Every structure is written in structure tokens, then in C-alpha cells.
Length: 190
Image 1 (cartoon, rainbow, N blue to C red):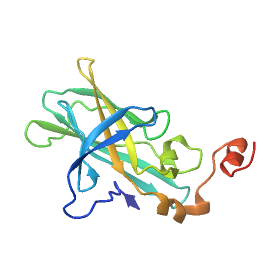
Image 2: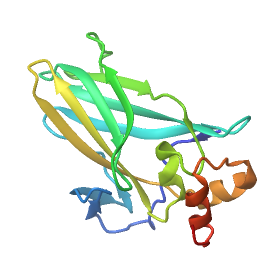
Image 3: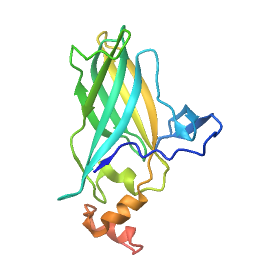
Image 4: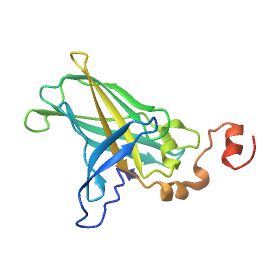
């Protein structure tokens, strides 16, 4: 089952605006919002072309994040670190070495596409905690380390509506929380 950026597009002809997003650690960023959907983040080094994920619910439920970045011709990235910054402390999704030769993405640009390691969809699992919250967007931070040692940071917001998906999985979602944390989540005193 593919769940790629479940964007909840606004009504036809919706006003273009600028959205303000606040990460779990308090960082604020803005992105243009077109027809109710945050636009692609970009700067002088890169564009965040895709932030999505695939799910596999055949055995133990899991998700696999996938990303596409486009780099400008003058940018020579060596590493790319992607974090989920939706809730509380940042959660590392991937820290990858960027290959020296990347496929062309048009006029003096190169494209980098990759998938992160699988993440268990489970209560208490940091990499999937965002799925169980009420927030309307999943928030990401990407940090590219360039050949000269400098870094470039982009934040991206993706609208996700996971309540129906989580409800459909129901009892198939394991609980990886500790006993005290489970009782507190159920409204009991630890």
C-alpha cells in the first residue's frame, strides 16, 4: 500500500497564502500554501521535491520514508540528514552519503532519491509517533553537508491525515511503550 503525501487539497480556487509551522522543538518556519497544501521548500542549494512514505501492513506494520531532493549545479552535497521534527525532540529518519554522480534533473540540476530504513508502526516507537498525534502536518528538517563543509537546511511540511489509517490497523499496531507509560496513556495512575 502506498501512502505518498496524503495531501488534503483545499477547495478549488482557494487563496494562496503563507503557512506558519512550528516544530516540536519550537523552530518556526513558513512556506507558501497553494490550494491548502504547503509548497516545496527550496533555497539556493536545493529543492525538497518529495517527502512521502510507503507502508507495509502484511506482517508487522511498518513504514518506509522516501525522499527526493534536487540540487543546484553549484551545490556539491556529500551527506544528507533528514529528521522528523513534528513532535518534541527531532527523530533521525536518515543520514546518508550522497553519491558523487547524480542523475540529471534538467538544466544544471541533479536529483537525489532515496528510501530510509523501515520503521515499525507502533505505539511508543519514536519514528512513527507522529502518526498517532492530532497535528495536521508532518514536519521535516533536511541538512545537506556540502563539499566545502558548509551546511544548508530546509524545513518541509506535509499534510497527513492518519486517523483513519491507524483506526483501520487497530489491534494490529503493537505497543512498545513501557508498562507505566501504557497505564498513563490509558488514563490510569502509574
